[in-house]
Amino acid sequence: MSALNVSLLQTTLYWQDSAANLAHFSGLLAQLKATDLVVLPEMFTTGFSMQSAEIAEVEPGPGLRWLTEQAKALNAALTGSLAVKTAADGYVNRLYFVTPDGIVSYYDKKHLFRMAGEQHAYQAGQQRVIVRWLGLRFCLQVCYDLRFPVFSRNRNDYDVLIYVANWPAARRHAWSSLLLARAIENQAYVLGVNRVGQDGNDIHYSGDSMVVDYQGGVVASLAKADAGVLTATLDGSALAQYRQAFPAHLDADHFTLN
Image (cartoon, rainbow, N blue to C red):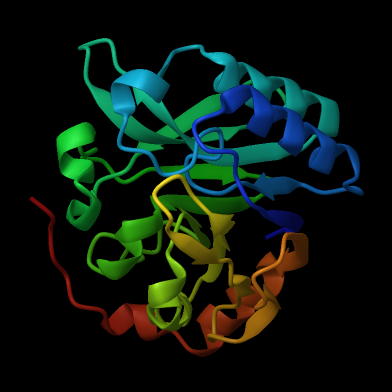
C-alpha cells in the first residue's frame, strides 16, 4: 500500500458567492507544494446555505469544472462538496472526488442536518461511496454523517474516511471526539476538514481540522480558529501492518443496511 500526501484547506467562506470562493481557493492552491490529495470544506463555493434553488449548480457547473481544472493543474485529486441540482429537479449536497485524469466520483450526503432544515432543502443520498486513489481506498462522508457510525462502519473496504464539514464552534468537542472514535473503531485514517469564520446566518465555526491515524492518534491538526493548510502523509504500509498485527475487524458484528 502506498504513502500519500494530503492537504486540508481550513478557511473562511464567502456567503453564497461561488465566484469569490473559487477565486479564493485558486489562490490557496497556487501556494501548495507537491501534494496527492486536496480536501476542501463542505459547500466550499457557498457556505452551508439552505437556499438550494438559488445556489445549486447544474452539472457540469462552475464548481465541478474548477475542480477538474485544478486537479489537472496540480496533478492531484481534489474533493469538496457543492449544492447540486439533479436531473430530477431535486437538490443534493454532493461531495465530488476528482482525479487529475478527469475521472469524477461523487457521494450525496445521506444524513441531512434537520436542526438547520437541510432535509427540506436537499434530498438524502442512499449509497456509501468508496473511491480508489494511488493505492488507497477512501470512504466519502459529509459533516453530520460523522454522528452515525453504522453508515461509516469499515467492512474491510476502505483505508481512509473523509469528512468535509461546516461544523459549528458550539459543538466543537463532539467534532473532535467523533473523528477520533471513527478512526479507532474502523482502524482507518480519518481526514476531517472544517471551515472557520462566520456565515450568513451568524453561525461561528472553529475549524479544528485534523488528520487522525488508525489508532486514534492525531497526526496533524489546526486547533485554532485560523485559516491554514494542514498537511500530512498517510502511510498505507503502516496501516496494513497494524491491521495484520491487531485484526479486530475479524471479530466485528455482521449486519446489513436497509
